[in-house]
Image (cartoon, rainbow, N blue to C red; front, side, top):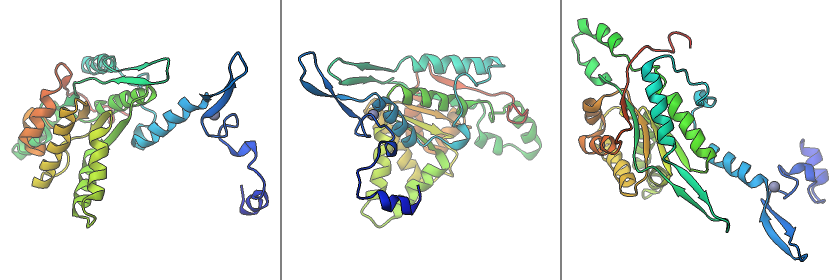
Length: 278
Ligand SMILES: [Zn+2]
């Protein structure tokens, strides 16, 4: 709508077409009448849809994975099938129970789900130059579908009613470090930490990618340990392996992160499907 028509309409009440939901005028509540004719407030049918949209927006799903789902995940190799199976059975550990009185109870998995490398980036980088290329080819961990699958999982969980936060390691760690240096009595840092610690599910893409620092190591531990204490799961993927992940995020954080996976820790390597244009 342009400015002038907005001005013209101002004295009037907004028309029905200005609401996303004309039924409840975006209040998400409607008045209904019971069998004796008494009015009572009830949730509008648009409430679920809007709640889903809000959660989806808040989840910060990276643009390039907005269309990732379970249906379009390619399972052309055994390890992809294994990753898929693990993710589906992990998904089944979650449930939302809706009671008649309108309250809901969320059941979270108390385990983490992790896809890591057999031979980590850090280890490959330290090889003599002559061996590096061959080892990289043999132990490729890029483009195998880790992020795709975990975003598909995130989207399904959001749909089911969970608050999911997706963070990308390098960006997120930079943000935390910047917040730490801000002169606002820790307000920004606390806000970032709070959302990472309290989200029902935290999806941590590419964990261990950021350059190591002592400050980052402390932040990794804080988030991972707090979530562990609250029994809240972390879904993560990394191009590092069990050993090199410790070097990148600290031994204490890595051992808690990996130790909380149970059967849901998969070491994957294979062809880079991005190179095949798949
Ligand atoms: Zn409505």
